[in-house]
Length: 446
Image (cartoon, rainbow, N blue to C red; front, side, top):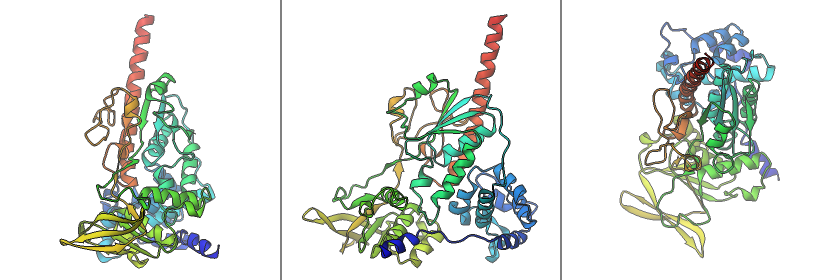
């Protein structure tokens, strides 16, 4: 039990700024006339403005500025690729002294959540009804933005709890689940209703939602169907998708499943295929779950990995080993039990003992909505096709889509950026339809 508790303690995140540390960090901001940090932010946050408010101790004002652009600041402050975006564009970064924008955003969002500083005025919900399918980053952004615009929004989520990948796909040490729940409560306080344990497609289809009186429907279902590599032995019991493993660990940390139900055990030798952030999360989480040895196998070079440099450095510091320009070409078994892997590098093959193999090679959209709805076109890979005007609308009138179900799997903030544009498209569409309906009604009455 003590060892189990020690492993769980590894999931605690690193402490953020204290009030004094946050104010001192904020004071370093130069408030550039042309702020490059804001240019580097996919959702165009007014970063120097809210940092300046923090520097003066005006935390409520800082939060108000952030809320104008973001529904998930406590999440973005933790998991955004800051080094490639706001922080990477900071003029001080050239000297290695860039402003820690992410930690400041995390600080102010946490302070607001704990102190309950901001209580937004609710808009009358008279502008229309919108159904949102999926409660990941895109769905939550759509819901919050439209609620602030005066729409009545209801979110339909297949899991027993909202949050999508934020709840089940990002490790606790990077994004505590209580933080996600707090952000979702703020969106609920805007008047958004959540319906969990509801899978649109099998349980409830698009036509039935329209029949319930919704003016528009948003699909933010992400990419939940994992890609599979054509490797001999891929169907052995010890081979799992990395996202499945991360979900199981999340459920275990919540006390929902037993330790033996997590597919990595004490002393395991684990190989992870892929080198994106999910691969890094899986590798570092496997170590936290007691794996003796964890190795990442990637077919390209270190310079070509898609994971953040900070995530790579964290993995190296924790003991993860890397096999560059290498492929697992076969997964071996002994009497039906996974026993090893064959790794090929530069034309040479070697056999390594293995207990588990985790695949982190991406995912594609599931087809349960498209297959139960007429008129929604997809491309050859299953991604939903949308138009530019109104932004985000599919080939089915009134049905919109955004985030990973439309684009290649991406970061939380890029899904939010896309969703904000779609929210504007939905608002324009519903306003136009209602205007035409009122004109037709007036004509009929005349």
